[in-house]
Amino acid sequence: MDNFLKSYHKLRVAYMERCGFTQDDPISIKKGKKYIKLIAGTSVVAFINHTTGAIYMPASWQSPAKHIRGNIYSKEYGMEAFDTSGNVRYLR
Image (cartoon, one colour):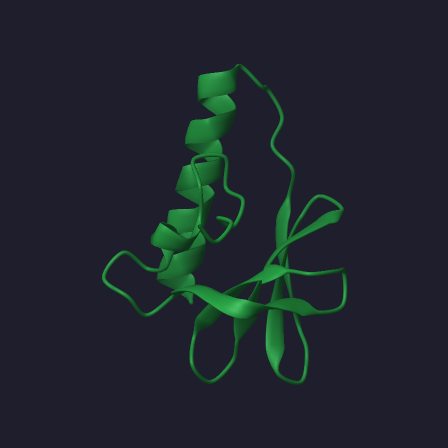
């Protein structure tokens, strides 16, 4: 999980620098029964399954979408699930 959070933070910082923003939203996590909620500022960015490491796009503040977008235990620590701005990718 630590490697995933470090990689995600690098992605967000690179996006902020590229766009000329001076302040980044604080990134926090909130642990639930089944999922870890990744929060940037006041928005849910992703849900991560405790046991499998699967990354889900948020469907709402309280629940993830149905389909898995990536995994934090993959070679790239789950960064394939995110676009260049740090948001979870839509399915194509």
